[in-house]
Image (tube, rainbow, N blue to C red; front, side):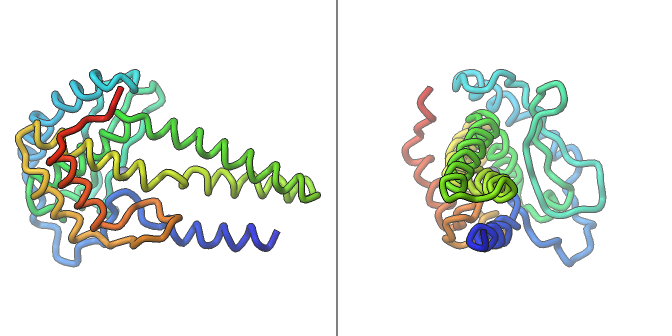
Length: 231
Ligand SMILES: [Zn+2]
């Protein structure tokens, strides 16, 4: 089982970077964009997000709410999920708004997160986790592992499995996010400037995020091709 533990440690190290996470800015946070600016971005982006979601036809609920977290503490971050009633939402922290240098950057982050929901990445990731757990659990069992070892192998398999396609999902979300940002009247290339300032996770296969250069290239390609995901 030592081999499994080593894998787990390297996976944990590789997944410390959450979606669009940045180090906290060390300047004072007095430059938060006014609330009306965020509301303005949401007003332009939300109808495009809903239309795209409905025409893509993957997500059941396309009323994706776009929020700013009501806290003055926390990191530069953005994420998407569904609440207890299955209603999708995207949250960005005030620190992310502070770190963004244009409305285009905020729009691209919001659109990227919404794209994860539109493309069904949460449930696809859960399926990948179940697949990984089954695969590694069966391998351990075939190796004559004890019950506890098999349980540990399944846990690790789920962890690795959930990350197997993470980079692919991130790039898909970048591409669709760029098109939605463009359709909402923002400049997605300008928005991608954000990728110059977030820490670059590099090319490690188990990183949840692709390199920032890859992300910028995907945004450029999406704008050039203008192709939305096949339904
Ligand atoms: Zn993401």
